[in-house]
Every structure is written in structure tokens, then in C-alpha cells.
Image 1: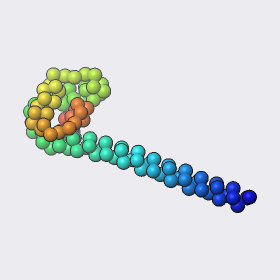
Image 2 (image 1 turned 60 degrees about the horizontal axis):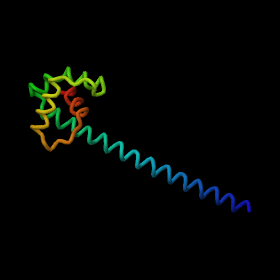
Image 3 (image 1 turned 135 degrees about the horizontal axis):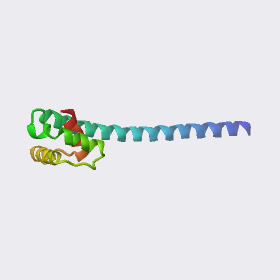
Image 4 (image 1 turned 90 degrees about the horizontal axis):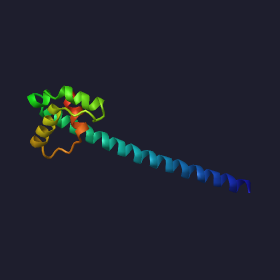
Length: 105
């Protein structure tokens, strides 16, 4: 009987470890995928608009936007968003990602 309990406990331990590892991998994959998409959007914008006057003029507004979690939306930042989306229509980036990209320029 003692061996049966020991075997049962070992089996449960192996199953629990496997479930935790799978959950950890799924969570890690999701986080890395989201970070990668954000990084790619930031990289595309910052490399494409490094010398763009409209985008560079929106840096202060972008800083306010990021610091206020999107509550403060300045006119220059809105112009920059429109300009970026018109220039790169294939870019799938949120306003927050674009504002962060503008800050890296």
C-alpha cells in the first residue's frame, strides 16, 4: 500500500510540473509575441521618420500622451499619427505604440 501511495504522489508531481511548464511556456510565448510586435512597430516608425519634421515636432505631445496614458492628445501628435498612417498604411500600430516610437526618434 505504501508503494502505491508513493507511485501516486510521484505521478501527481510529474503531472503538476508538466502543467506548470506548459502554462509558463504559453504565457511566455504570448508576452514575447506582443513585445516583438511592439518593437517592430517602433522600429519601423523610428527608422522611417527620423528626419521627418511633422513627426519630430510631435515629440513633446508624444511625451504628454505617454505620461498621461493616452489622456492628453495634442494637435501636433494627432497630425503625426495621421501622417504616419498615411505614409505607412500597412503599419498595424496603436496610438500608444506610435507615441513611444516618436519618443525614440
